[in-house]
Structures are given as structure tokens and as C-alpha cells.
Image (tube, rainbow, N blue to C red; front, side):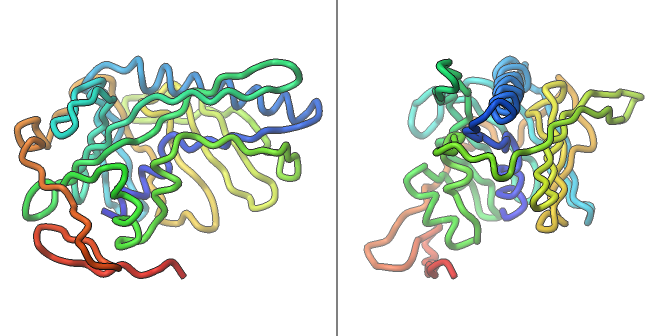
Length: 262
């Protein structure tokens, strides 16, 4: 579950700055165009079965497969769904959420992805996790759902103290495919994000002192993906329940105590 959560954090993770000054506005406009290109071309316009395969340096692999707009078996709501096929397998259901920001008299609409619910395939069956329960669940396994389950954040007030450098490079993939990738680098910490609207989901890799085990894209395709959690299986998913006692949640009858963040 931890690897799946890490991949969720990285996918669609573009900076959303509100910059002031001419250089800042130019940078913000580049990010604005890139963000909307990725959400549009690399997400909402994908065909069912499009996939991206990610690996860590340790060789752990996760395949993300796109299934488009579907009706959630538990809530009956219509969301976009990605199935992450790793250890464990899971489905994340998203909605598109607009963010309007005013720069220099113009209004820019950033399209962001807001995860709404999760189905996870554990050893003893399928678990359903609602948006309301996810913050508690993340406290158990370690992590911050506030990063994952909130739509993209636009930083305000304006801040140019860590203006990113944006460049373009070319990367190679199997079958002699080459794609143009945008590199967003933050000079203060040396962190880098590689992304492209030419691959499903837009995410390629990150470089940072904290991302040694971060997944990176090794292959992709626009059709042929298969499904591990069927609609029939998802219907039988058991919800994670918050018991009537402080400091714990219950999964399949097992109560797990929640510890506060350090």
C-alpha cells in the first residue's frame, strides 16, 4: 500500500505557484499550459486500457491502467478511474476540479484531479475507502492524504523566492520511442520533476534527496491494459469502518490504533 500511495502522490504532481513579476508570470503561464495539457491529453482524453508502467530502483513495479468515466459500485457516482496494479492492487476514482487564478488582470483556469474514493485489493478481499475515511487510514500506514485527496493547490500570496527553472529534454523508451519531456527544477533544493503530455498520466520521474525510492516511468502504451478488480469484485468491497472508540480504525474486524503525527 505504501508504494501505491507514493505513486499517487507523484502522479499529476505539478507545482501550482502564484507568481508576481514579469519572470514569475511567464513561468506561471508555462506551468498553466503544461498542467492543462497533461490533464486533458494525458488523462481525460485517454482511451480505456491506456497504461503506464513504473518501477523503483529496487525493481518493484506498478502498472497504472486508465478506465475512464465509470459509475462507482459503492456510491453510484460517476468518476474517472485509474487502476494501480502493484502490491497491492487498487483503484483510485477522480473528478476533474477547476481552479481559477487571476494573474495581471487575466483569469487562468487550472484543471486539477481530485481523488474521491479508493478500492484496494488486500489479501483477504477488497476494501473500500471513502474520501472522509482516508485521512485516518493514512495516519495508520504513514503519509499525508492531504497531498493526494485534495485538488491541486494554488499557492498564494505571490512568492518568487523559489522560482523553478523550466527546460525541455528528450527521453528514450522501449521500441525506439522518444518523447519530449518538460523538466521543472527548483534551485533551492535541487528537486526535479520530469513530465510530459505524450505519456499516459503525464508523470515520468522525480529527482530529489528524498526520492531515492520514488517510482519512475519505464514503459507505456495507449491500449491493451487489463483489469484486476472487476466491477463484481468492487461491489463486494468492505468499507473501512471507524469504530466507536478514539484512536483506532477497523479493517475486516481488526482494530488498528492511530498514532498522532510526529
